[in-house]
Image: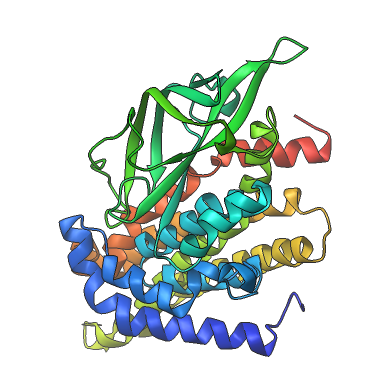
Amino acid sequence: MSRARLPEEYETLRSTVEQFAHDVVAPVIGAHYEAGTFPYEIVREMGTMGLFGLPFPEEYGGQGGDYFALCLAIEELARVDSSVAITLEAAVSLGAMPIYRFGTDEQRREWLPRLVTGEMLGAFGLTEPGGGSDAGATRTTAVLDGDEWVINGTKSFITNSGTDITGLVTVTAVTGTREDGGKEISSIIVPSGTPGFTVSEKYSKVGWTASDTRELGFVDCRVPAANLLGERGRGYAQFLRILDEGRIAISALGVGLAQGCVDECVRYAGERRAFGHAIGEYQAIAFKIADMEVRAHTARLAYHDAGARMLAGEPFKHEAAMAKLYSSEIAVTNAREATQVFGGYGFMNEYPVARMWRDAKILEIGEGTSEVQRMLIARHLGVG
């Protein structure tokens, strides 16, 4: 794959999702955002299009594509709305991908056919109330009792965990002590509705209000021993692998939001008049929008590069961290600048830029904060 131009099959996918975002998502998502409702009808259509199955083999009902194709779809959705984009990203990257990467043949056959069609959503329970970026501080425990795991603990900020179509949550839990005295962390699949597994009410969030995010509780929650995902004690390493890939996807989401800000400002600058001229004729506005375009384009090149390295089987952790850091920060900048271009109207929720402004900040926090990305980049350089 060229890192500068998209091959025909990728461009076809990109343009198809772009059209879907404008024709299907844009007309209704504002109402969902204001009401804080989950867009089930959009998710169903995304499933019909095959978006949830983009990077999975056809044997499981997937599209036989790759992770970069998923990122292109996420970018185009985020140009219109980030709640829909994060729903897709989390369902694939955090919900289905761990089962595909680390699951047994039986686990794949049981869960993937419904996950890759969007009939069912999966979630990944990693973050805990007192942990934040320190995933190694996991306090949730899972004790093997005969042929069952008994899980106790709490997970926070878990996307797609409480919808009507959520089918499972994969949780990380302490399952013992390593030889060096550290925590043995494993991943375990917990089906929705399992006794002892409770899902809180939706969080009241600043942004992403049309996506599902909840706190999860586990009190003597029992699941079969066979629900262990991958090798016992490898849960932390699995999560690192998943997050490395996920950073490319979140970068794509940030690029989409940043580009959506450009799209809205270009349109508005041609329509809005002040002092007898379209505001786009004033250099202050024109240069502001030009800078926004430069940021979005540069960030896109960064995630394309990371994605190309991943597909080629090359190391990509460093490039993914840089892409995620830069894309998330320029998304925040573009959203702020777009709000300024719109003036008072940029503060009104009826305009997409207001939604983008509220949605952007979480990109600097979720799936690895900006501080974590800088730490990873510094370590790669041998400093810090």
